[in-house]
Length: 381
Image (tube, rainbow, N blue to C red; front, side):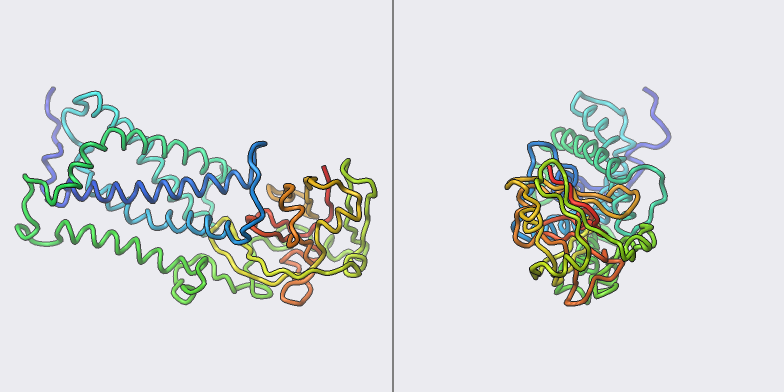
């Protein structure tokens, strides 16, 4: 086959090195796998199949798993850019397909590189609440992640013997030592990539890890900024519930085929019931989390008052007229937990309307999008 004008030999920098590529690939494999598994867990929690039941305890587990998901995604950005730069000459290798293994390796690059760039870009844009697209982010991000991880598995399978051999060696026998060329060394390149990854994580992780809060210069959310000291993703105005939430005729209803005594309660009725206080985190799918003191009526007390059977699941519906998260479901573990509340107060004060006044759901170990605000109905199944 005739040689093209550009081949892998055209790129003479010794930094386009198999050893650097192997170490960056190993680091990316760990970051991507962790990010994928924690993201898959979050998806199962939000859209649970029949066989999956997320527990209510430990109360702060979700804030850890989702914080890890976002942190590893952010950490992967400089590692991916460095990896692509190091291996860029191999995209021009000639002939393009030499063996079956080489063909698998090259073909797997299409979903791997394309999927990696898409998932990292869309994920960072999502936590920054910037949506320059019209597709459904959760569904698209989820399915592209599967495509990406499939490409990663195929790529690792093709490259594992070579990468393992390269990593075991101190330095490839045919490569010049770092001192033999001016400028950045291979070790310096790896150090710069890992340092950039660590620094980027450090200045964003404060939105999840409270001791690093002061260092969170690039954190999309500061966990204490917002009404009553908590951030707000969706305001009452944005949800179009201002009038309904302030309606003096507001009623909370408890009904469904799982109850024997349907309820219709005013806000005064709810405040007259036994109040329970709980210190619980609110953990957003965007990675930030913050602990707060909530008080209100236990959901299980309401279910008992309505004559619901033990082990019931509950659909919690909002005054919000439309939206992907205007309702959520409490499985039997969450519905029965002592700290799952219909909260009326936050830090000892009535809920701000942007935090769900007059009534909001708060429970342990749940994503923030499932802590339904402006609750108006419980449907017991």
